Length: 554
Image 1 (cartoon, rainbow, N blue to C red):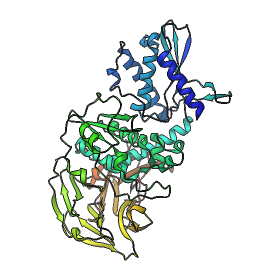
Image 2 (cartoon, rainbow, N blue to C red; image 1 turned 90 degrees about the vertical axis):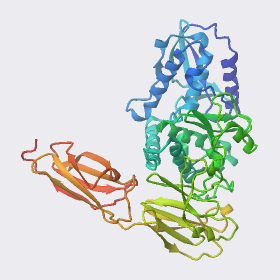
Image 3 (spheres, one colour; image 1 turned 180 degrees about the horizontal axis):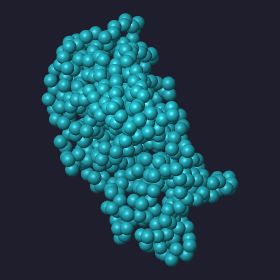
Image 4 (spheres, helix red, strand yellow; image 1 turned 135 degrees about the vertical axis):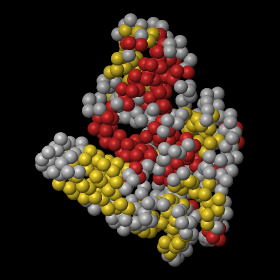
């Protein structure tokens, strides 16, 4: 890595010290921004707020970013250049331009994971004319010529990785209700990431192995602070919640800020995701989700520990509001559950409560108090909470309970006696609950027990055609009132002609009130098949096939 460090040093010197007032015509200049760390970056705020004499910088960078953002969804080849001559940016300001563009691509847009950070800026007649994505040849420590590429992967690989990111995005969004406040949306993303991702302990073995980009974070479900920051920021962009990175060169760390009601607050997902071991074989308890670093002011985060005492450019996006410095969730170390506008958690006495997360105190209402008497092999209590189809599942040291939200009834779902082990956590995936068993929470999960939660099918579907028309009446019935529909339950209507699929339409079951009228997308369709799958494409209903009468269909 020494030769890379030399390249960085040389390029930084070129950017900051080279006399840019004397530039030859038709000349190209290297732009470089490091992919291996974000700590040293200065936070400039919005691109439009840069200290520049040329407001067209903002429009130019926006054009470049937008063209790069189209790459994963376009069938075109990777672009080799982007024309920026329309902005008539003076070549004398090339260093300022490099800095701003590098910041935008590296920090503000985690979705551009496929950029390697090497570009050429071309200028002619003292005007910046284009960004050129050409290979760059440099010498390594041994004097050998090596080639650096502007893209870190092929177009095929970019599209493959983006599809994985899109699938994970849809899954996260399935937990978010449109009626949620921005705070609730940020909290949902915060808890999901911490419950489903873990800190990349490979960084302790070899720093270069650590997952830092958005794509590797999502694909490997592990990452260091850059990965947490980028994934959370990416989701905030999708949810249209203003956010900013908070890089700290002093602490070699980076975290996020978000804006709520005009005020900025710190959120550090890395510190809220507890690491009990640096072993690569360690499997963390998924339900352990801290909220200690959720919505803190500048003063609060500086005083909370020695890892956040300073960060780069503290005057940008100051978090002066202390409204949430005494937020009740700061003392809650477990994942919350949400259902139809209501939040649930275990309080400090291990009582199941409904809460108002938008309130500083939470205004808890006790729903189940017997859990306060649960005991583990150690002093602390570790009841975990997950919501599934209108029920809350939680655990004692050896028992899984089911609390029905509508009736308020609690029942034992499963009991098992463990030898010197306890249930320390649980999670639900593909309609199955997994109990996380350990002899000590500090040792991580030693084994899991899987329990199916439903018997298939849980929906019955039917469809009928109105005479010879192109209108189909489709009905969906829930066969088990205990299994309330989830956002991830999708009804599919597939249309066929000559036994070939010609169209498929999706509709959330939660958006269907028993039945609805469906209009054929292709008037020539000869058959439809209606069925319900969940987000993992597991069948939740039998297939309903209907041959269509097409004689007089118009």
